[in-house]
Length: 280
Ligand SMILES: [Zn+2]
View 1 (cartoon, protein in one colour):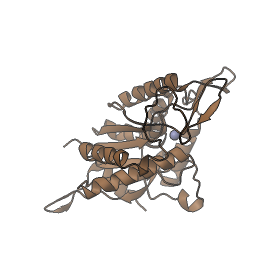
View 2: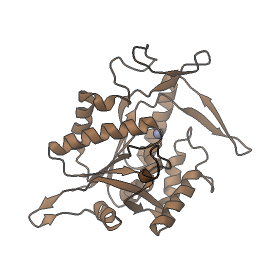
View 3: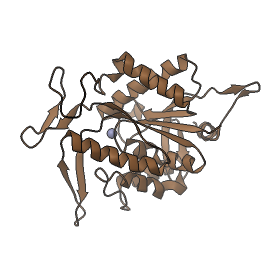
View 4: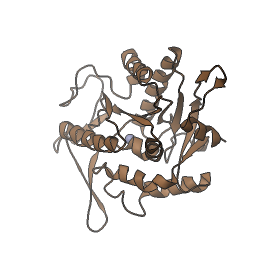
Protein backbone atom coordinates (compact mmCIF):
# COMPACT_ATOMS: atom_id res chain seq x y z
CA UNK A 1 0.00 0.00 0.00
CA UNK A 2 1.36 3.44 -0.95
CA UNK A 3 0.98 5.79 1.95
CA UNK A 4 -0.45 9.19 1.19
CA UNK A 5 -0.46 12.61 2.86
CA UNK A 6 -3.19 15.05 1.90
CA UNK A 7 -2.44 18.76 2.32
CA UNK A 8 -5.25 21.29 1.89
CA UNK A 9 -4.22 24.95 1.80
CA UNK A 10 -5.96 28.19 0.88
CA UNK A 11 -3.38 29.90 -1.33
CA UNK A 12 -0.37 29.02 -3.41
CA UNK A 13 2.48 28.79 -0.83
CA UNK A 14 0.36 27.93 2.25
CA UNK A 15 1.03 24.20 1.96
CA UNK A 16 4.78 24.71 1.61
CA UNK A 17 4.88 27.32 4.39
CA UNK A 18 3.25 25.14 7.02
CA UNK A 19 3.77 21.58 5.86
CA UNK A 20 6.58 21.80 3.29
CA UNK A 21 9.21 20.20 5.53
CA UNK A 22 6.91 17.31 6.44
CA UNK A 23 6.00 16.77 2.79
CA UNK A 24 9.64 16.89 1.66
CA UNK A 25 10.62 14.36 4.34
CA UNK A 26 7.82 11.89 3.73
CA UNK A 27 7.89 12.26 -0.05
CA UNK A 28 11.57 11.24 0.15
CA UNK A 29 10.46 8.27 2.29
CA UNK A 30 8.10 7.11 -0.48
CA UNK A 31 4.85 8.79 0.45
CA UNK A 32 2.51 10.12 -2.23
CA UNK A 33 1.45 13.75 -1.76
CA UNK A 34 -2.12 14.89 -2.48
CA UNK A 35 -1.91 18.67 -2.91
CA UNK A 36 -5.21 20.56 -2.72
CA UNK A 37 -5.84 24.32 -3.11
CA UNK A 38 -9.15 25.61 -1.76
CA UNK A 39 -9.23 29.07 -3.41
CA UNK A 40 -8.84 30.19 -7.00
CA UNK A 41 -5.71 32.26 -6.15
CA UNK A 42 -7.03 35.31 -8.01
CA UNK A 43 -5.77 37.83 -5.45
CA UNK A 44 -2.52 38.84 -3.76
CA UNK A 45 0.51 40.85 -4.78
CA UNK A 46 3.47 40.15 -7.01
CA UNK A 47 6.64 40.75 -5.01
CA UNK A 48 10.04 41.31 -6.49
CA UNK A 49 13.35 41.37 -4.60
CA UNK A 50 15.24 44.57 -5.37
CA UNK A 51 19.01 44.92 -5.32
CA UNK A 52 18.94 46.84 -2.03
CA UNK A 53 17.21 43.85 -0.40
CA UNK A 54 13.75 45.40 -0.15
CA UNK A 55 10.62 43.98 -1.77
CA UNK A 56 8.59 45.81 -4.37
CA UNK A 57 4.97 44.67 -4.71
CA UNK A 58 2.69 45.22 -7.68
CA UNK A 59 -0.79 43.87 -8.46
CA UNK A 60 -2.46 42.01 -11.29
CA UNK A 61 -6.06 41.45 -12.31
CA UNK A 62 -7.75 38.09 -11.77
CA UNK A 63 -6.92 36.11 -14.91
CA UNK A 64 -3.15 36.76 -15.04
CA UNK A 65 -2.89 36.44 -11.26
CA UNK A 66 -4.61 33.03 -11.23
CA UNK A 67 -2.36 31.84 -14.05
CA UNK A 68 0.76 33.07 -12.27
CA UNK A 69 -0.01 31.66 -8.83
CA UNK A 70 -1.35 28.34 -10.15
CA UNK A 71 1.74 28.05 -12.33
CA UNK A 72 3.98 28.49 -9.29
CA UNK A 73 1.86 25.98 -7.41
CA UNK A 74 2.37 23.44 -10.16
CA UNK A 75 6.16 23.88 -9.99
CA UNK A 76 6.26 23.32 -6.22
CA UNK A 77 3.84 20.40 -6.40
CA UNK A 78 5.96 18.81 -9.15
CA UNK A 79 8.96 18.92 -6.82
CA UNK A 80 6.81 16.84 -4.45
CA UNK A 81 5.96 14.40 -7.21
CA UNK A 82 2.38 15.53 -7.71
CA UNK A 83 -0.01 17.94 -9.45
CA UNK A 84 -2.26 20.39 -7.61
CA UNK A 85 -6.00 19.84 -7.32
CA UNK A 86 -7.81 23.21 -7.40
CA UNK A 87 -11.20 23.52 -5.70
CA UNK A 88 -11.35 27.08 -7.12
CA UNK A 89 -13.50 28.78 -4.51
CA UNK A 90 -13.24 32.51 -5.28
CA UNK A 91 -11.20 34.59 -2.86
CA UNK A 92 -12.96 37.44 -1.04
CA UNK A 93 -11.26 40.20 -3.02
CA UNK A 94 -9.25 40.88 -6.13
CA UNK A 95 -7.37 43.66 -7.92
CA UNK A 96 -9.70 45.38 -10.37
CA UNK A 97 -7.03 47.43 -12.13
CA UNK A 98 -5.70 50.94 -11.46
CA UNK A 99 -9.15 52.57 -11.65
CA UNK A 100 -10.99 50.17 -9.36
CA UNK A 101 -8.16 49.21 -7.01
CA UNK A 102 -8.85 46.41 -4.55
CA UNK A 103 -12.43 45.14 -4.93
CA UNK A 104 -14.32 43.11 -2.38
CA UNK A 105 -16.51 40.29 -3.64
CA UNK A 106 -19.82 41.05 -1.93
CA UNK A 107 -23.22 39.41 -2.19
CA UNK A 108 -24.86 40.26 -5.48
CA UNK A 109 -21.89 42.05 -7.01
CA UNK A 110 -20.79 41.36 -10.57
CA UNK A 111 -18.08 38.75 -10.92
CA UNK A 112 -14.62 39.47 -12.27
CA UNK A 113 -13.15 37.70 -15.31
CA UNK A 114 -12.35 34.05 -14.71
CA UNK A 115 -14.89 33.51 -11.91
CA UNK A 116 -17.87 31.34 -12.88
CA UNK A 117 -21.44 31.97 -11.70
CA UNK A 118 -22.61 30.12 -8.61
CA UNK A 119 -19.18 29.19 -7.30
CA UNK A 120 -19.42 29.70 -3.51
CA UNK A 121 -16.66 31.98 -2.21
CA UNK A 122 -14.19 30.38 0.17
CA UNK A 123 -15.84 32.27 3.04
CA UNK A 124 -19.14 30.42 2.63
CA UNK A 125 -18.00 27.17 1.00
CA UNK A 126 -18.30 25.25 4.30
CA UNK A 127 -22.05 26.00 4.33
CA UNK A 128 -22.53 24.77 0.79
CA UNK A 129 -23.57 21.11 0.74
CA UNK A 130 -22.23 20.40 -2.74
CA UNK A 131 -18.81 21.91 -1.91
CA UNK A 132 -18.52 19.91 1.31
CA UNK A 133 -19.57 16.70 -0.42
CA UNK A 134 -17.11 17.25 -3.28
CA UNK A 135 -14.23 17.52 -0.81
CA UNK A 136 -15.50 14.61 1.32
CA UNK A 137 -15.60 12.48 -1.83
CA UNK A 138 -12.04 13.53 -2.68
CA UNK A 139 -10.83 12.51 0.79
CA UNK A 140 -12.56 9.15 0.40
CA UNK A 141 -11.18 8.64 -3.11
CA UNK A 142 -7.58 9.51 -2.18
CA UNK A 143 -7.82 7.76 1.21
CA UNK A 144 -4.74 9.42 2.77
CA UNK A 145 -3.16 8.35 6.05
CA UNK A 146 -3.39 11.95 7.30
CA UNK A 147 -5.15 15.11 6.16
CA UNK A 148 -3.47 18.39 7.14
CA UNK A 149 -4.99 21.87 6.90
CA UNK A 150 -5.15 25.30 8.54
CA UNK A 151 -6.37 25.70 12.11
CA UNK A 152 -9.63 27.47 12.95
CA UNK A 153 -8.09 30.45 14.76
CA UNK A 154 -5.75 31.53 11.99
CA UNK A 155 -5.23 35.20 11.35
CA UNK A 156 -6.22 35.09 7.67
CA UNK A 157 -9.98 34.64 7.33
CA UNK A 158 -9.59 32.55 4.14
CA UNK A 159 -7.34 30.16 6.10
CA UNK A 160 -9.99 29.96 8.82
CA UNK A 161 -12.74 29.39 6.22
CA UNK A 162 -10.70 26.66 4.55
CA UNK A 163 -10.33 25.00 7.94
CA UNK A 164 -14.13 25.03 8.38
CA UNK A 165 -14.63 23.53 4.92
CA UNK A 166 -12.05 20.78 5.48
CA UNK A 167 -13.41 19.95 8.93
CA UNK A 168 -16.95 19.62 7.57
CA UNK A 169 -15.78 17.46 4.66
CA UNK A 170 -13.52 15.36 6.87
CA UNK A 171 -16.29 14.39 9.29
CA UNK A 172 -18.58 13.60 6.38
CA UNK A 173 -15.85 11.29 5.03
CA UNK A 174 -15.47 9.69 8.48
CA UNK A 175 -19.22 9.03 8.55
CA UNK A 176 -18.73 7.23 5.22
CA UNK A 177 -15.93 5.07 6.60
CA UNK A 178 -12.72 7.09 6.23
CA UNK A 179 -10.13 6.01 8.84
CA UNK A 180 -7.31 8.53 8.35
CA UNK A 181 -6.31 11.34 10.72
CA UNK A 182 -6.96 15.08 10.59
CA UNK A 183 -4.46 17.59 11.94
CA UNK A 184 -4.29 21.38 11.93
CA UNK A 185 -0.98 23.04 11.23
CA UNK A 186 0.11 25.96 13.38
CA UNK A 187 0.89 29.25 11.72
CA UNK A 188 2.82 32.20 13.11
CA UNK A 189 -0.13 34.07 14.57
CA UNK A 190 -3.68 33.40 15.68
CA UNK A 191 -6.74 35.60 16.11
CA UNK A 192 -7.87 33.99 19.32
CA UNK A 193 -5.05 34.50 21.78
CA UNK A 194 -2.52 32.40 23.56
CA UNK A 195 -4.59 29.28 24.14
CA UNK A 196 -4.78 28.82 20.41
CA UNK A 197 -1.02 29.12 20.09
CA UNK A 198 -0.59 25.68 21.66
CA UNK A 199 0.50 22.65 19.69
CA UNK A 200 0.33 18.96 20.43
CA UNK A 201 2.70 17.21 18.08
CA UNK A 202 5.38 17.93 15.50
CA UNK A 203 7.42 16.56 12.63
CA UNK A 204 11.22 16.88 12.81
CA UNK A 205 12.41 17.74 9.30
CA UNK A 206 15.88 19.04 10.17
CA UNK A 207 17.63 17.52 7.09
CA UNK A 208 14.96 19.05 4.83
CA UNK A 209 15.12 22.66 6.06
CA UNK A 210 16.91 23.89 2.91
CA UNK A 211 14.55 21.80 0.80
CA UNK A 212 11.55 23.51 2.39
CA UNK A 213 13.03 26.95 1.65
CA UNK A 214 13.54 25.85 -1.98
CA UNK A 215 9.87 24.85 -2.18
CA UNK A 216 8.88 28.26 -0.81
CA UNK A 217 11.15 30.00 -3.32
CA UNK A 218 9.21 28.32 -6.13
CA UNK A 219 6.39 30.71 -5.20
CA UNK A 220 8.42 33.50 -6.75
CA UNK A 221 5.74 36.19 -6.62
CA UNK A 222 5.16 35.59 -2.91
CA UNK A 223 8.58 34.74 -1.52
CA UNK A 224 11.38 35.91 -3.81
CA UNK A 225 13.54 36.19 -0.66
CA UNK A 226 13.16 32.54 0.46
CA UNK A 227 16.85 31.80 -0.16
CA UNK A 228 18.08 34.44 2.33
CA UNK A 229 19.55 33.28 5.66
CA UNK A 230 17.29 35.61 7.68
CA UNK A 231 14.09 34.62 5.81
CA UNK A 232 11.16 34.59 8.27
CA UNK A 233 10.06 31.01 7.57
CA UNK A 234 13.60 29.73 8.15
CA UNK A 235 13.74 31.54 11.49
CA UNK A 236 10.31 30.19 12.43
CA UNK A 237 11.39 26.66 11.49
CA UNK A 238 14.44 26.92 13.71
CA UNK A 239 12.43 28.40 16.57
CA UNK A 240 9.99 25.50 16.44
CA UNK A 241 13.04 23.25 16.27
CA UNK A 242 14.31 24.64 19.58
CA UNK A 243 10.86 24.12 21.12
CA UNK A 244 10.77 20.51 19.86
CA UNK A 245 14.38 19.56 20.60
CA UNK A 246 15.52 19.33 16.96
CA UNK A 247 16.86 21.57 14.21
CA UNK A 248 13.61 22.34 12.37
CA UNK A 249 10.02 21.37 13.10
CA UNK A 250 6.46 21.87 11.91
CA UNK A 251 3.89 21.75 14.69
CA UNK A 252 0.29 20.60 14.72
CA UNK A 253 -2.82 20.01 16.79
CA UNK A 254 -4.77 16.78 16.48
CA UNK A 255 -8.39 16.81 15.41
CA UNK A 256 -8.64 13.04 15.22
CA UNK A 257 -6.17 10.16 15.22
CA UNK A 258 -6.00 7.61 12.42
CA UNK A 259 -8.02 4.51 13.12
CA UNK A 260 -6.63 1.81 10.80
CA UNK A 261 -7.10 -1.66 12.25
CA UNK A 262 -6.47 -5.25 11.45
CA UNK A 263 -7.16 -8.37 13.55
CA UNK A 264 -4.35 -7.43 15.94
CA UNK A 265 -5.58 -3.91 16.54
CA UNK A 266 -4.49 -0.46 15.41
CA UNK A 267 -2.01 -0.13 12.57
CA UNK A 268 0.54 2.68 12.71
CA UNK A 269 2.19 3.80 9.48
CA UNK A 270 5.50 5.75 9.68
CA UNK A 271 4.02 9.27 9.55
CA UNK A 272 1.38 8.45 12.16
CA UNK A 273 4.03 6.79 14.28
CA UNK A 274 6.21 9.91 14.30
CA UNK A 275 3.21 12.12 15.09
CA UNK A 276 2.22 9.87 18.00
CA UNK A 277 5.77 9.57 19.28
CA UNK A 278 6.06 13.37 19.26
CA UNK A 279 2.67 14.02 20.89
CA UNK A 280 2.69 15.76 24.24
ZN1 LIG B 1 -2.66 31.89 2.61
